[in-house]
Each structure stands twice: as structure tokens, then as C-alpha cells.
Length: 114
Length: 112
Image 1 (cartoon, rainbow over the protein chains, first blue to last red):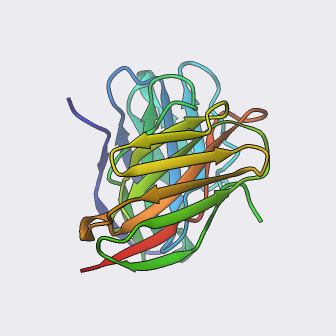
Image 2 (spheres, each protein chain N blue to C red):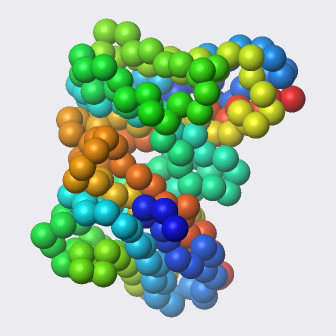
């Protein structure tokens, strides 16, 4: 079966531009997470979707960051007016139900802001 | 220090030796998980140990959990060059937001 997929795999953009990153979770997984990982660092939690509940946005670093999850499946992370410090790998993960189950990660999108 | 801190930050050993990585955390947990990451991309789940378990094995992996000390260790026996990767522990805290908290990771290098 297909795992979590993310697109694009790499994105280079200019400072000030908006970018959209896409995540396709494993079919049937109700929980979806976005993380950010800067070079050589751990994972920084950004946002968590669980079913039809209101998302946990507590990790979003600024109001330039937003995310949606349509139809309980595909998610899009949008970064507006990108800054150089937004450069990182953005990882998406999905999970069958509660967060204490293992999370299945996508390959990530490497974002470079010039 | 933050929830889910690994040590050492980097470990370099010879192929065939055992590698031990440690993780400490601060708050009560439901479980603790270890993940592996190659080349800064997606993480792969290795093993999950619940708060009422003390030790768990999976192939060449052995995980221990000491809730009194709020610490866990990951042992990789008979290491191979292919084990070279970053290893992260992640905790699911019992209170508050339902998400995993990841540590900064241990970068493991296995020298042939």
C-alpha cells in the first residue's frame, strides 16, 4: 500500500513569495501532522489535524503559516511572504487514530528561500 | 533541557560494535517511541515502549524504559554500516496536547 506522500520534494523560492506544500496521508488515517526540521536539528511541531476536530495550531511560528485539510485527507501547508529562516525540511506524518500510535512519515519537502 | 533529549548528540563506532543512545524526558508519558532518519528526510518508526513496560526487543534493537528516572535507552547490537543515521526519541505526554514531542536526535556513524 502507498505510504505518506509529499510534494514537491524540493522547492526553491524567492524571499517574499508564497509557497504551498502538499501532503497525502495514508488512506484511512485520521490524524495528520506537520513538522519542520532545520538543518541538523530535531523536529519542530507545527500543526495537528484529528478527524473533524479543530486543528491544534499551537506550533505554527507566525501568522504567515497556515494549513488546511480538505475532506479529512489531503493537507496543504501554506507559507506566505517566505523568509530565509523558513528554509527547512517540512515533514508530514499520519497516524491511524490517537497520537500515541506510531506516526508514518512522508519523505518531506526541502524548502529553500533565497 | 526540553522534553525528549537524546545523548550523545553524535556517536561514532566501528562496525560490529554495539551502539547505545539515551533519551531523557520531563513529564509523565503514555509511551516512548524511537525513530530513525536517513539523510534528513522522512522518519521511520523503530519501536514503541509503553509506560508500563521496562524492556522491549525488535531484531537487533533493544529499548529500555525507566519511568522513575524518566529515561530510555536504545541499544543497537552488532552494528552495520547501514545503521548510520540519526535516531530520535519521541514522547506522548499524558496531559495537554495530543502530539509527539521529538528530541534533537543522536547522529550515529558506523565506520566500516
